Amino acid sequence: MSQEPDSALRRARQQWTYRGSARPSFAITPAPGQESVWDYPRPPAVVPDARRVRIGPIDDPIADSTGAVRVLETASPPTVYLPPNDVRTDLLVPTAGSSTCEWKGRARYWALAACFEVPVAWSYPEPFPEFVAITGYLAFYPARIECWIDDERVRPQPSEFYGGWVTDEIVGPFKGEPGTGHW
View 1: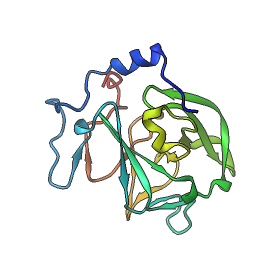
View 2: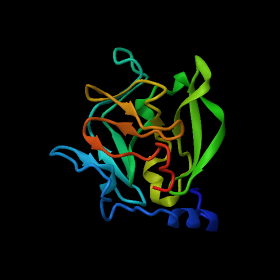
View 3: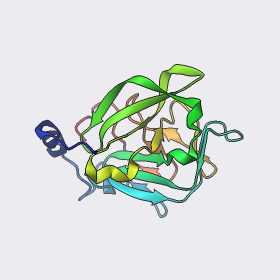
View 4: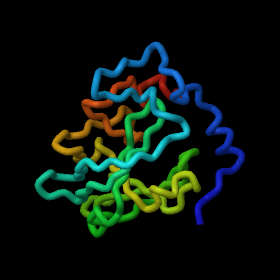
């Protein structure tokens, strides 16, 4: 059963200044073929992505998928979630701890079995009803493991906490840099 947001989470959802309805003056204007993170909605949207996504060394990935979804949220680069059937989950182990997203629910973290101390991925085993589409899907931190979309190596979103995927098609500035917590 999916979790339901409580009043504290409802308040957290209401705190955001920017919601994707108007691009702020400091945002970079996207060129043709690019997307501005300031045009993404809040609450976030889940969008299918049929491009090839690989995680880990490109010649021996731990995940390889053309069934990914992107979660698009104002001010953040997309977060890419992969279906568990496209991930070699035998190479992952759950880690201690969790966190709560006001939009998606309680996250579980995953590490490589060979190095179980540092989480490289997370998932939502029981997301809030609006995000049931990502139940059990895994998202990976591009700062901690190689992530690829088609043949482009993904760059990490600034910050140790966020896991957004920066590619040439995405323009910001991005949440996660100093002074951006309220975005």
